[in-house]
Amino acid sequence: MDVESAKVIAAGIAVGLGAIGPAIGEGVIAGMALSAIGRNPEASNKIMPFMFATMAVAESTAIYALVVALLILFVV
Amino acid sequence: MNISLAPEILFYIGKFGVSNAMLWSFVLSLVILIFTFFIRRNLKPVPGRIQAAVEIFFEGAYDFTRSVVGDDRKTKKIFPLVFTLFIFILAANMATFIPGQSALTLQTEDGVVPVFRAIMSDYGLVFLLTIIVVISTQIVAIAINGPFGYVGKYFNVKGIASFFKLAVKGEFKPGLLAQGFLDLFLGLMDVVGEIAKIVSLSFRLFGNMFAGEVLTAVMMFLAPFFVPLPFMFLGILTAVVQAFVFSVLTLIFITMASETQAVE
Image 1 (cartoon, chains in turn purple, blue):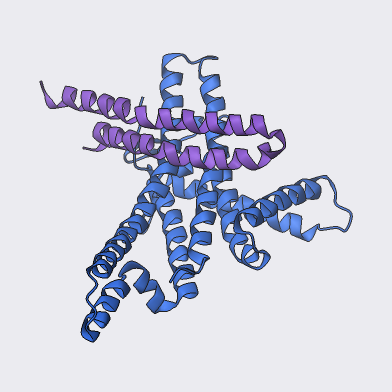
Image 2: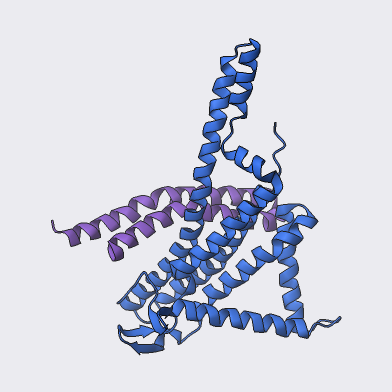
């Protein structure tokens, strides 16, 4: 296998595996937030901003994987 | 399809290369400044339409900031930094959706380069914003805890010192020593956490915006009409959410740094 094809495979694996955890995490966060809103609909204005903030934190590992993949593809 | 991680250089002033992201960020700052001065000069007791909209926006942001900080005096100090970051990042992200901008190109020595670029997909600028946030966080922490308290938070030798103090007196408590080493270790881990803040905060914004650009470019390449629209809508959502997240995380970092440690 030459280096170019190894790079493409590595980038694919990096994003594919790196996206599993954050996807589960964001699902849990959204589910929890929705059930909280269901219990107390008046609090939705307070819950939504924090839901987005925590989602972004959970998402960051996927973004790291994405950045690694981009570095593999375009820089290294 | 050409995707480049670094911004393209448009022209040189002396030896200093002006990139498209930099030019665009200066233009955008100028637009925001002029808009702000315009609003400020035309402030009236009975607000017009634009003033009313700006007031609602400001009040909402201020109320949200206060609900996180929980103190009016602190909020007045933190709010300008956080809100400026929010406005600038939001404007920078939304500016990528101005139609027709990607058609403008410039002929340079390195070939044809686009004049406009999504500002936050230039890592240099995002890194600069992150450094501003991290340094102001550290300054707040030093101002609140004092220089010795600040250093003591990261190199926590209080527990070990108290063990030796008791040992000199003749009381031997190994539990205290273990606790002291644990505190020292946790303090050192906090140093790692502070450094990780730089990486996580900057890569989150940069990665999201750059990925949005790449995704739109790929979709345009595959199917030029109608198919990219849902992805662009997703891009607008990301643009707003990421601006919000960056400023909220700034707010949370500074608020956490400004709280005195009551635990002794």
